[in-house]
Amino acid sequence: MLKDPNETASKRSLTVMIELYKRKLWNDEKCVNVLAEACLNTNPKICASACKFFLVLNYDFESESESESSDEEDKKLMQGRYKGTKKMTKARQSNLDKAIKQHKRKEKRKNKVKITTDFLPIDLIYDP
Image (tube, rainbow, N blue to C red; front, side, top):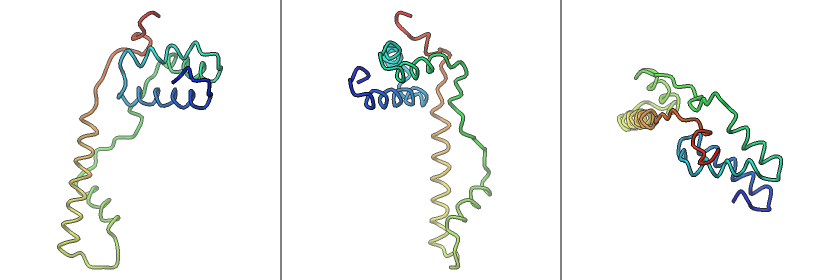
């Protein structure tokens, strides 16, 4: 897809591949070598983006702020979502509890996916 003559399609596919690598979904050698081929592209924008990917030394993929929130903070957050003039009934309370559990489950899954590799992308190129 990166060899497509359409500039916008090539640029879009390059940014998608870089984003997938950063999110650690496609962090294998094949993806890195496709990005390495993009460094030899005739289009200067594609070439610059691919080279910038390899030259960045500080890979801070976990840039999103991860704050450990307690049960009370989660409850306040979810109550703000269900805030209104109506009285808190048993059904609303159970819905609130379900939402809190679902939020905790999502956070637990997000933290569980962390897989660290000590290799920089430039180390995964077949023939550097």
